[in-house]
View 1 (cartoon, rainbow, N blue to C red):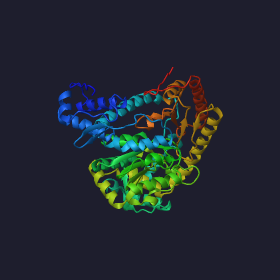
View 2 (tube, rainbow, N blue to C red):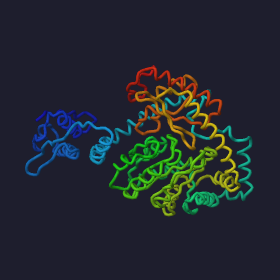
View 3 (tube, helix red, strand yellow):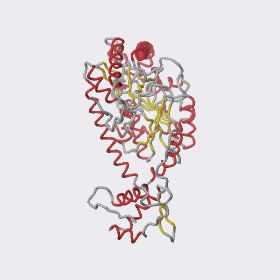
View 4 (cartoon, rainbow, N blue to C red):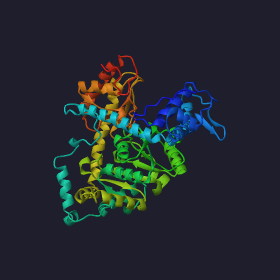
Length: 515
């Protein structure tokens, strides 16, 4: 039997120290399959801890499949294969085998706490780095909001005047917490025209789509519902769930949608899965019908709810929209969130959520405790803009401009980018997803790009675990045609400089051998 050494002054719990020492001995074959551990009472005396501490350590090892207790005989080391050569589907199968064991061990709470601190620390560091990229003289490939230069002088003033031609008293009194009825009616009507048959009582007006997501996060925390987010995804979603006390698991997403093999690892309970099916941020592509069907099948099997972020749906430049989870799963298993922040003005802070009438009443009560209601004047401005037909005219105008910008960006990438660099071709939205060759870091590239006069968003910003180091997001929302042409050529030069160095491990910071 090996000697277990513990440090009673350490922050790490004693049972964790004992468990980790035994686990190390098992994996390096110091303790071999079939070896018998001392009885709990003798083990406790030998180490100098309570019997309860020993039992908890052994329970964790048993759940990991490293030991097994035989009644009347004692605890024995199991025949555990400590290292498997895996790739492709074999890696997925290994992940499936061990995922639920890991997720349910008693040490999971300690691991969650440590992981939260690590996630937050790296995220804070990345956000500090991004402050360098906010200089006004940079060509802005990092901004994913509407270009204010697309609005004619007096545009917003005329919107306000149009709203105030109606009964102004409705903007003065205490409004309906669920939102102005005329705005909810207009939103419902627009969804019906898209083939999603809802009524105004299934719509809740929120302060932007972020408040809608925050309400979902609060509700999930109260119900202790397990949360899954795509990776990569919009950073604000995962951060919202985290700050409201939810642990966030992730499922890998490629250009087609969440990868079913990884999604199917999550079973046995109702989950809340957050997805962006249309013009995904940051990947830029639509979820394919096959991936939609696989996700819907998974949701039905596990009685899970889909949170569908559809904030970019009015920015379609070509092609048909993807299938709606509302139609394939129904109102009880779907929550849609959206806003006018990407098509009109993010400063208006008008968004909405759509689900069953019962769920919307629950969220309305939760919102009432949060801020009572959204500013009625802002709602009135948007309602009038919708009803007048000016919103649809505005969409035609901006789609034409964004189409030109997207096309030029794709042409310039094809012309200037070196071999080995890849990118997606979005059919709408604001952004596309770049991929560097293996062993090169988008964070190191960003520092070089800033020095040359451009910015973008590196891949780790779109993952709670800061992966996707070789990826980055480019946006054509904010830059004009001349800036796009100039900026992509500059970016390509920065990429070529980066690729002159040999590939390597970028490290936890993502900087690698940044020069």
